[in-house]
Amino acid sequence: MKKSNDRQLIKRNIKPTAMRELVLEVLTEEETAISLPELEKRFEKADKATLYRTLKTFEERKLIHSIDDGSGPVKYALCLEKCSCEVEDLHVHFHCTKCNKTYCLHEIPVPSISLPKDFSLESVNMVVQGICANCE
Amino acid sequence: MKKSNDRQLIKRNIKPTAMRELVLEVLTEEETAISLPELEKRFEKADKATLYRTLKTFEERKLIHSIDDGSGPVKYALCLEKCSCEVEDLHVHFHCTKCNKTYCLHEIPVPSISLPKDFSLESVNMVVQGICANCE
DNA sequence: TAAGTAATGCAACCGGGTTGCAAAGATTGG
DNA sequence: CCAATCTTTGCAACCCGGTTGCATTACTTA
Ligand SMILES: [Mn+2]
Ligand SMILES: [Mn+2]
Ligand SMILES: [Zn+2]
Ligand SMILES: [Zn+2]
Image (cartoon, rainbow over the protein chains, first blue to last red):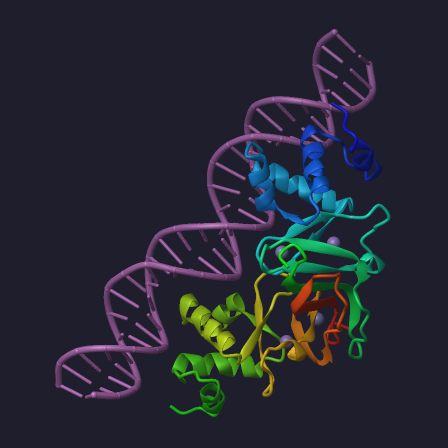
């Protein structure tokens, strides 16, 4: 059962199983980030641990990245084609406090800041809380 | 048993109980943020729920603010004297991936960014991951 | 001092995340 | 095409941080 998304999986060195195709499909059609518990509800039938490990695999292979918006469960969203999850790929995330959806603002890179002496930077997490366009 | 910190509690409309004085003392002597589980270990004797509610009270009255650095439990740190936890009081936090300590970088305000059309901002959380000065 | 209010202690619960292990499925060398 | 091997999946149990209900204790105040 070849799916159109198999190329993406293969490119990231992920063996395309049925489960993985389905999860990738959901991630693709969602315009906002999705959490493990949400994914569970989406499938009804699939096992939590399998979904969990699927997400972990996707994340390791940089097909998706994780977002902790502070609202509870960690959410996941597709990486852009060219993303390798390095500092230069980091972007701001937006969490709507009304609908609880979390958006990747790919066009907004995280601003660079100058740290105190002897502090070195590895990564940055910047989440803006507010009301999204859909919620007005 | 009057403590030197009672003034701070009273100023924030928090009745100074023994428990609260102790928790405030710990928060004051710590230079980095502290989590509920860490606080529990610090006291050995005190009840988790009480500590939990103490932190909640302190946070409500803006004596402390919470920091979710993504490393697990939420951490708490004292607010500055003049802080009212508004957008203009927001500062960057630094989480050391080596010692797991989390620092308030009070001198570094969160950079302002321009959101997409019809997205409104309520708050911002910016956490820098890296190695702190102590860990070199 | 008695009644009312606030804080504390204890226990139980919840939800997200994670792991061990056995069953099922895919791969490969012969 | 089969057997041995490796990978993925399903199930169950567990961990841990957070949260709540409720009874007890400590304060407050009339
Ligand atoms: Mn993103
Ligand atoms: Mn801070
Ligand atoms: Zn929204
Ligand atoms: Zn450190």
